[in-house]
Image 1 (cartoon, rainbow, N blue to C red):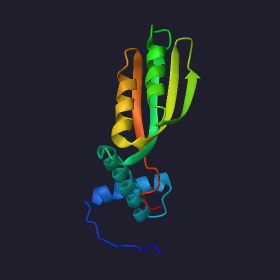
Image 2 (tube, rainbow, N blue to C red):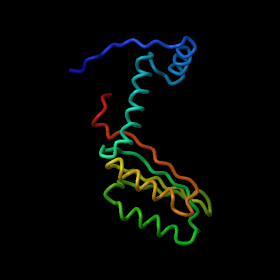
Image 3 (cartoon, helix red, strand yellow):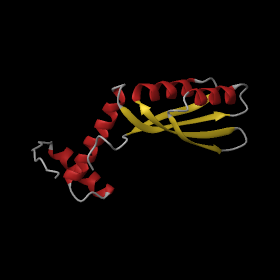
Image 4 (cartoon, one colour):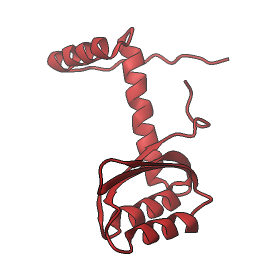
Length: 140
């Protein structure tokens, strides 16, 4: 059975008002729910720094598909790490620009390495790794 731990937090009055405003705008019923979500978000971020932890996430890149050899390089990187990539989405934004979103799962250090290789590929205009939890290590 889950238990609840109560603890006290002291905040500057203005900071507490901002927390309450944000909580209302995001639809939280109370401060505790908002703070619990913020703590979970920080724990997920912390897990990314621990290379041996299993994480999930997305790698998003935008690139010009007319750039010579870029498509081959991106495909090679993805094929070399197929055990980490669980799904891909490819979208043609316009005649030149493509958006790719790769859903990934695996060790944090390996995911970061693949993301770095894809984002650093010459011709990639923008890229971002967004991580989340696999759900196994965080309570609801």
